[in-house]
Length: 183
Image 1 (cartoon, rainbow, N blue to C red):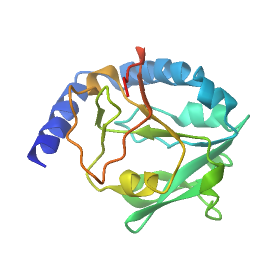
Image 2: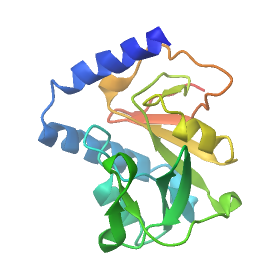
Image 3: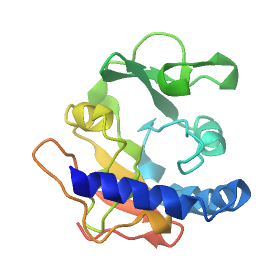
Image 4: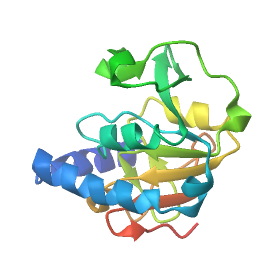
């Protein structure tokens, strides 16, 4: 656990070296790279996330992708995530942890999700993910049998992420340098 805290602290310090504009520019490169992924190109239903200020910026990506695919966003409900269909910015409302979340009915057809694009504090080149420490995504991703793509800035890559039985690895990890995982 201590090692995970140290990685989180290190990544937080590295992020402070970038301006918001620089991070948005890198984010645009990352989402542009991911958009070329063949799995995503063929997908009909995509689980994405509406980014927090310290994550790869996805607001524009969500908007563009929702024009051609069904985009699902997570909503925090107690200790769990549930999914809702993104229908536009006007339907977002601040939810748990000050995250913009879509309103409406929960989306429960988890088998229809073709690809999940997941944020993380850090990833390693084997697809291991370090989240914020609450386990929301790990608990939820265990329910999914879908292709998982982790996205992060290059400076968020770690040599090795400590992982255990409750952690869910990504199938691929993408940064501004493109595909970087070796799973």
